[in-house]
Image (cartoon, rainbow, N blue to C red; front, side, top):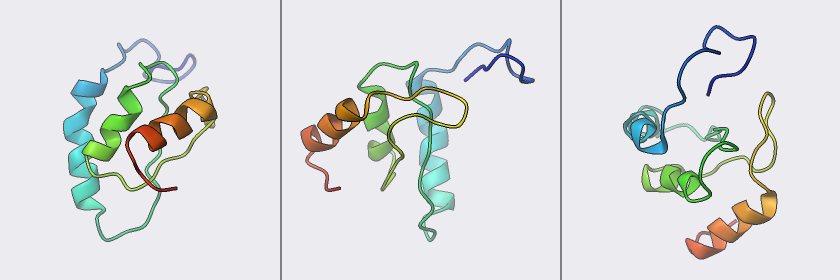
Length: 87
């Protein structure tokens, strides 16, 4: 995600479909750890965050992030219920 003032500020953002292979590899490489899987999703479609669960994520942070605005927590909770996941 390009953020003004950072080295990648002029980069084109990648799509959720472009990042999906990375998400899968990340989950395989960290499968024995219980670290939360954090990604800023504020600039993406509401359906995009659900893709991380299809890639194997077992958790994520809702609300705003350190450098970006996240989706509305109510939308995140709705996605969790729609996917029939447990909080």
